[in-house]
Amino acid sequence: MELIEDWAMKEGRKGGGINILTKFHKDWMKTVTSTVFTNKLLTINILTKFHKDWMKTATSIINILTKFHKDWMKTVTSTVYTNKLLTDARTHAHTDAGHHTVT
Image (cartoon, rainbow, N blue to C red; front, side, top):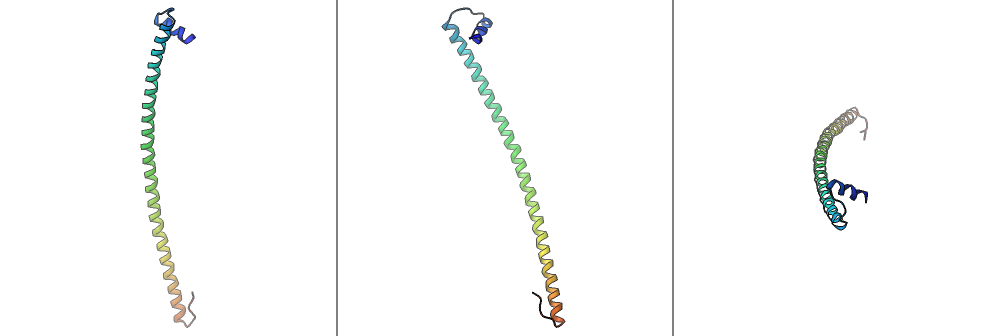
């Protein structure tokens, strides 16, 4: 009730009972509606910015992981191919020397 009395004093109104409560309620609803609408817009703007920033970050991470994967695949392929060549060379050397094939 103190809130209503403070408002009535600010508005320069005294007494009037129902009319003061009705006016207070209308003013209060305008304030609340405006605040909620403003907060919704701010929230939407913040979430939109967060989403855009997150998408940039996620895209960067995906690009980094893709590059890592490509580099890793080159390394693995090169290592496997090199090991195959070395194994074939050793096997061939053992076969030429009259030894059994190493498997």
